[in-house]
Length: 275
Image (cartoon, rainbow, N blue to C red; front, top):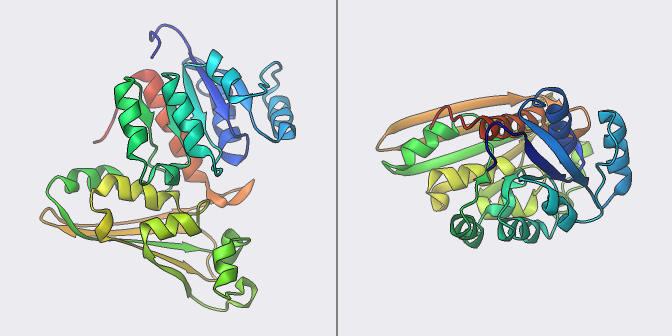
């Protein structure tokens, strides 16, 4: 990481709701700590739109390599089939990285090893849930049972192949309906844009085999909510987070964007509050 007296150069790949939200915060709120060194997205129109909203020019980059050449820290906000490769490339280039597509880190021990080998920081924000600090502490004593129950309105689950394969018609749901009940690996596989919190919880709890994920939907829901219940030798933890959806993307919680911004701010200030 660069010296604290200098602004940290932040390169962003992925200019959707999350990447754009972080970019706007860098320009508006964190400008005394960091600055955007480049923006990249396969959809160049998204970059153009974001540049205009930031009232800045010359930020567009044509490749990941161009982003890495100029930045100190890379923000990953892509969630594509090759996201692991993008993260690996950044770590190999010895760049610190803020990973927003946390599901891509599940069962990716090699990426953690690479970060340690190259002495770079792999930042994983808490996301749209509460209690990760307590879960991490509790894992030291041992977690015997842990459940994440996610509740979303049908609109937040539209267009997901798994739901269609199960014969679930979201338009015909009239009350609380269990969409998924299973392990975290399957949850992240089938709901890659909806359940990053499940991966974060799995990485934090050190008890992935004891983690159950439930996804429930109802037309009466107006918010995305995540409820965690954990038990073990430490006692019992119960948390409930009710999230407002991002205006630009109903599949993303606003708190997830804010969490990424706060993680970046803490990194730039060399400050950590909580476990």
